[in-house]
Length: 337
Length: 116
Image (tube, rainbow over all chains, first blue to last red; front, side, top):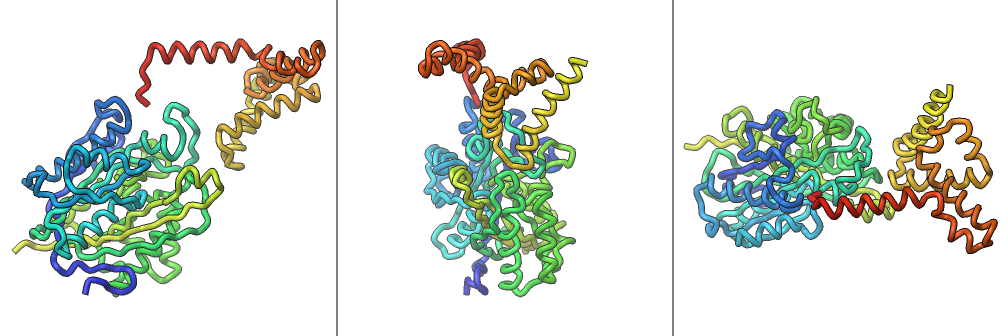
């Protein structure tokens, strides 16, 4: 019933993703997945006065578009689970101020996308809500300011750094049948392999992805072959090979099915250092590309392990290491009878 | 030949900065302040003046020369006024740079609205 193994939830009461909506910024719109975004902006400001307002607009538009695509009214949404990267989750809170939907804010850094989807699915499964929205956003410039340096400062970055993507993704979860079923979720543990370089989050988050994927497969009694795709959130070109090696050491080969959202979202010739990152990274790739592939039948079962680095600039200044977390959600294609 | 030395010495100082960023993982602010302090310390041993004589702009353009100028001004006034001279003189040689930073900062703030 519900819980399987140590950390995995099975949604037995048929929980579906009915609709999704994605909004993306200029760099992402030039990437290979541009066709899968509902709305794109050609300017980081998104016609707003500052970066924070721009991010808020992106999140709001993704939520509103998602509701519209599902042909629902805002007051039919019982709950929204949302999160972003800014202090006090201001993007989500300020967006919720306008939307007037009951909200639970969540923070799991870049794992928030699957954290919100897992909890939304659990609440729908349990019958507490009928229609739930899981939404996340991130913005390159707001994240730069909060986690790295002021945007006008122009500090150098090493090749291991990732580029926070600008975007927002929302999913409408309910029990109304659709082609995409949320089958299970594996809730991650905080892992820390004592890495402290905020310009190499890919490596720091590998242990979390490793632990969550391994636990998920063990809990479900499955092997990587049972999945058409196992994606991690934002391990980048630095973390992805390390993850594959760590899995291989345990006799689990994910080479053929693994990909990373941070590598899928950009072309290799774009100036993004080691790849994309950010709360919206796994959200826009999942709710855009992966959902569309599931609908078309090109994918049948996908595990999305969204990875998040849980540090703050203050912790880095105090010479703390960077703990990380990964939450996994399984989406399966279901033929509608 | 002057150009070559200026290029090599100035470039060498920048290489040290880059190594501090990439290998020692110092932040840009740490590199900046280390260079200012290093310039001042070298001037304390009268070494930086020799470097300027040798490499010209290669030694005056990098931020290390700011530390050198701070100490130079402070020491000069200290000779005439004792300890209080340190406070009087510290910004004497650098005042043009500091004043223009304030002035241009002010002008930019007056005429432009930051959106960053």
